[in-house]
Amino acid sequence: MLITIVTVLLLVFTGYIIKSITKPRKYPPGPTWYPFVGCSGVVQSMTTKYGSQWKGLSELAKEYSTQVLGLKLCSELVVVVYGVKNIRQVFTEKEFEGRPNSFFIRLRCLGKRMGITFADGPLWREHRQFTVKHLRNIGFGKTGMEREIQSELSNILNYIDKNNDKAINPKSVLPAAVMNVLWKYVAGERIKEERLKFLLDLLNARSKAFSMAGGWLNQVPWSRFFFPELSGYSLIAKMNQQISEIIDEAIEKHKTNMTQENDFMYSFLKEMKDNKSSFTEDQLKTICLDLLIAGSQTTSNVLEFAFLVVLRKRALQEKLFHEIDKVLGNEQPCWNDSYRLVYTSAFLLEVQRYYTIVPLAGPRRLLDDAIIDGYLIPKETTVLISVGDLHFDPELWDDPHEFKPERFIDQCGALKNSEHMYPFGLGRRRCPGDSLAKSFIFIVFVGVLQKYRIEHCNGVLPSGEPIIGLISSPRPYVADFIPRS
Image (tube, rainbow, N blue to C red):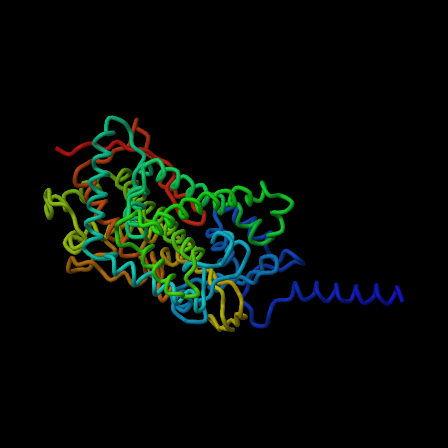
């Protein structure tokens, strides 16, 4: 009897091992799979070797000569897509609209897969539509928002003016300015300076913690029980609690009518009173977190990269200033000026191509079996989108590793259609805050360059190499902002 039980257990175990290392039929090429871990070791090794997961996976795709890279990370099937056709397919077709239901995703969303960034199905469709509609109803993406951005530009210029006797770190002012515009529409007010700094520090530390903890907590979530500190779980849980308290405080102020503005929180709370079952405080908190994360770092990072480029390329900075001075003079910039400032607009597009803020977009969860580039991808597979590689594809861009704004200007001197640029994604999951991001980047960049010449300090030229984690950011730098005569 004992021999029979042992034999059955051995057969079951052997069957499991064989199944765990056998790739599905017509699955894309990629590294060999090993029991329990899949090809996690190879991916981690390549990530360490090349400095980021995006670059490591890109090298693996080249090694296997494929535009659809097939992986298995522990028990999770993961596919990375490359090339225009494949990327557009994943961005636009409905079967790719899902989001993974993993512990890591739930942790990102304060414990539950809610909000609009990582929800899917009816909840996502209802709340994304509601969020976009009600933000627009209160002026998001309209002339009023432009005035808010111009007001923040004035605050930025005042900050530079007060501190231009010393080197300035752009990170000390840009993320806060973006957050103030965003929070005005979400919660109807500017955030007090001390609270704002605390919140930004929290979001920045949280982003770094997620970058470091991704492998552990995503692939082996039970590691948090044995290594809560080492896995990063304790730190993330603590920061989630602190962020929840900040958002809870804003919600409570709205419940007691302590703010007077017509904003997104009031719209959502009104919907809650109408007994809409999916409109809960947890859902409101997670949407607020989604908006804070989306707005606080990505937009300001683009601007930091833009200032870094003109700091490193003096002739380019002067060319931009001469266009701004010729077209605007001392006139305050607005979004409509982007059509008149052709070279400046081309420059900002090139910044977003050259320094792709989210080089590895996603993740998407496949809602049904799908064919990509002739390969069969099983339902529930996680799909990642290599936007960064597309932005450097030599078949789409001449000299892709050269920084050339001229690539976005046609022979008639007009701005070219940037059809192969995806800084805000594409399709139904396109970033809902793109109107704020584009306007903010343009108005603030033009407004600062109009008033100040940006120079490096103490003869030290900052590095142009980005730090690439979940998102790309410049290496910390400071600059001298010299008033223009």
